Length: 169
View (cartoon, helix red, strand yellow):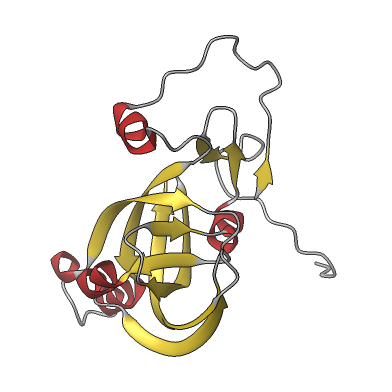
C-alpha cells in the first residue's frame, strides 16, 4: 500500500458520497472503505459441492481504514454472522500501547471494487470493522489522504501488482 498525492489536486474539495459524509462528520482524516466480507471456508464448501451458494455467509460492511493495524479487525457480532472459525489466540498491542489477548478467526474473503484477498481476522471488542495494512497491500490499493479515499492503484487498475524479489522465472 502506498500513499499517493494527486498530481493536480483540485482547488475545490471533491464531493464525497453521502454515506462517507455522514460517517465522517467530525472525523477529519478518517478514511472508510465499502467491503464485501465472505466466509472463505463456505466458498470452498460450495466449490466442492458440500454447500449451496445461497448458504454462504456474506456481509456488506463499511470499514475504517487503519494503516496502523496489521490485518482485518472484526467485532464479535460480525464474526458470528459470518460463522467464522476460531483459529488461535494471539497477543496484540493496541493503539494506546496496552496489550490484549484476542481470538484470531477466519478465513475471510475480502472484496473491494475489483480487488480481493483472503486473510484471517482479529475478533475485537470494538464496534468498528478495521481494514489493516496487510490486506490493503495484498489488494494493491492506495490512500488519498487529501480526498479521504481509498482507491484501486491507478498504476495497475485491472489487477493487483505485487513485488516478488529473489525469485527468477
